[in-house]
Image (cartoon, rainbow, N blue to C red; front, side, top):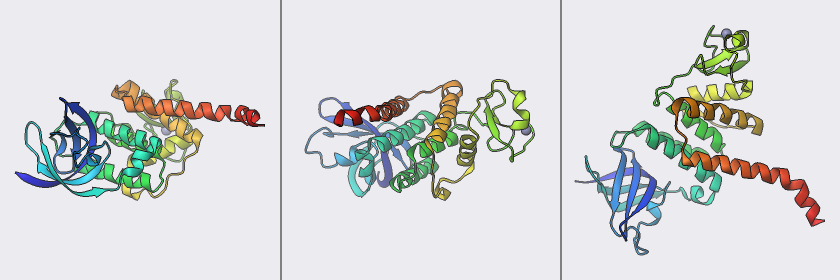
Length: 263
Ligand SMILES: [Zn+2]
């Protein structure tokens, strides 16, 4: 049966000589694999809509098992800013990869579809992409079976003292109880505060997100540790983001030297 549905393209891969398999996050029916006959052909009319991170309203057939099909595109949402900005593209690809890893196919994911759509709007408005990715990492931790305490001391519940993070106690730890875990992570208090806020807030209520480089590095250090040690996944998109960061740092370090070359 033909139906109208909203979807975001997760990824595509070649199939045979001329066809494509396109994985989509549909709002109504979760993650689905679509078979696109002649999708690789230059004349295929919906080639742009089949690109990763494209978002559109489609008409097609969603089958309860097996492959689904696209017949038409009703309305395309503006996501071209994600195609032209390598950093935004990398973070959004990572977010989609996390959702792909967290859920099985064919399970309704309305909440997560809406969050991804919201995240795209936030990125377009200029909110920090790393902060938005950290938001998804935090929100997905319980889906991966990990439920840390955020924003209050896991021992005494105090919220007013400087907080660190303890993997052993699975949560934030106030200054008075730092000795409880000698291996606490020594995370910058500001980074712990922002992550705690992101763990509790609704994404649409997040109006601004101004983060200093130092704070962002500390947020990454904590989230990467949790995902490496406890979730146990390391996505290719994450490695790419880490590469971008290291290139950026090398360019910053090189600046005085290149200035001399010019003179
Ligand atoms: Zn405490």
